[in-house]
Length: 342
Ligand SMILES: Cc1ncc(COP(=O)(O)O)c(C=O)c1O
Image (tube, rainbow, N blue to C red; front, side):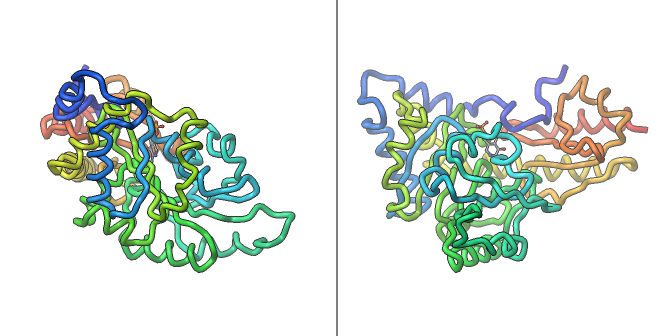
């Protein structure tokens, strides 16, 4: 079996610089629950990257970051608008509805992106007690379809949201991949685009675990410390998450790793598209490749290189590159696909 495959950026191990950061943090006693110097430095660094006057809060995982970040800014009779493909809608086992009480209004989109015109029809019931009240637009950057919102697209959504008394939440599990794809900074496509609340992911970009919930308006996050604790996401040994964020942001590791995984996805997409019976279904803009592979070959390919079928109906599969994907991994996989798919 190959050592690395393309099922998920979560299937990759931990970046060696992260292991080193964890090892270095593992020295003596420090205050728990975030009262340690690692956390102070990591928060400072995140503020340097995203803006000074923000609230930064570490949690264990991405689902927790989304659910708790959204819980902080909603009431149970409100609604969260998202793309049908959004992780909060498809892959969080209803956690958002369960913990917030909010309805999720999921909109079908061909490329994983939401647009303001699609949201307008959902706003007619505002002020009417029989209807849930839309309060947040939640988008994923990069999207679950491997596409990336431009800053202009995000800003248009933020402006639309604010004009209608809504907030813009970003699931940034792959924010680094998006920023690198757009050749911009983390700040430019978040604070700079009018984002209100962000789940800033580290796990898919080489961390062992850990995400940050960021409120760009501190008032929105005023109660978050209680919500996080009650939501079971206050890490007692926070220093190990903080040390990883420090490693991620202090030496451009976030950029190096995301640049690499994006480049590997480009190479994978371009090689696969040369195989006659394979069609890419989305532009490769971050670290994911989406392609239709004739159904009869999928299982055979999965036996050697496990990956997920994204849309059973059309036999569309998702292939992800990671910080540790190598050009040889891609060459070997593509060769196997070429031999298998006749
Ligand atoms: C877009 C997106 N958001 C959030 C997550 C976080 O999920 P988890 O709770 O597994 O860390 C994932 C993980 O697959 C994801 O793809």
